[in-house]
Length: 338
Image (cartoon, rainbow, N blue to C red):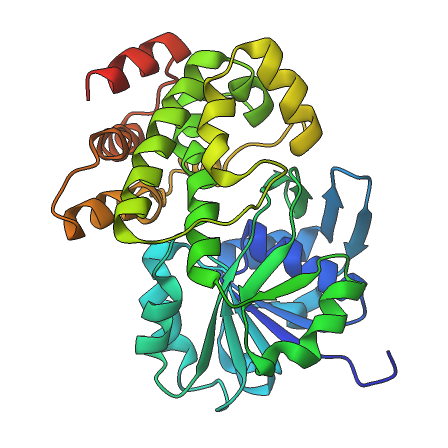
């Protein structure tokens, strides 16, 4: 790659943003991270360290200009990746709008369904593209971000991203462009329905998923969502080794079947946890309204209800005020009563 380094700005650089940006730095891209002063202070004392479940490891010293708190560097970007929490989407768009040059792609790498549309409303002159991050990233120590599950990045088909693709490929994070991004995002959301289950359990993903009662809760939320998607005429796509419609079947299966099949279709690092659990630990509001809440919103648009996902939303909001781990048995009993 003999061209000048692509200039990438990561706006809202927390766990996902720091990890993706760190991988791009390792590929030789020019990356500026924009985020909160708290994180900026972390990188004054620590390098950015990125690792993954396959053994990748790299460190980068960011210096005073590498991680900043002001949006001005977005004016020089060839590509902007927005990785803020969903509640901050509109604010992010309004902050970036005066700085991002017309035609520069702005990719939403956020949970949920509606963030790209909200960004576009806040940045009417920008070229906003919906994207999807399928893997989990956990901050293991100050400045150290670890990818704990498998998967590759996806974004809506858009010719403006073509020049960036080789950089993602070199970074070991291939970016697949899709014409069916709505189906991709809903299929990812089906997997993300485990985020509140994991956060309520208080244990790592692998330990949580090894307990059938937790999986039964997840299967209930997924079945409810799949029924609504079918009613709405929204197809799903295969993001794992198993067709999306069969994932609730696997989740509800006995432990010996789940263990055998899951090992073949999904790699999960023993330390991996959901971002929702991480938000609880940091005392931040969670994104449950943009995950399970999207299912509740879809149900209402169809003139019906989503009681399982609604209950998970309620439990997570209670958890934000009074965090306490739920046993698998207690959580399943509560959801069956929803």
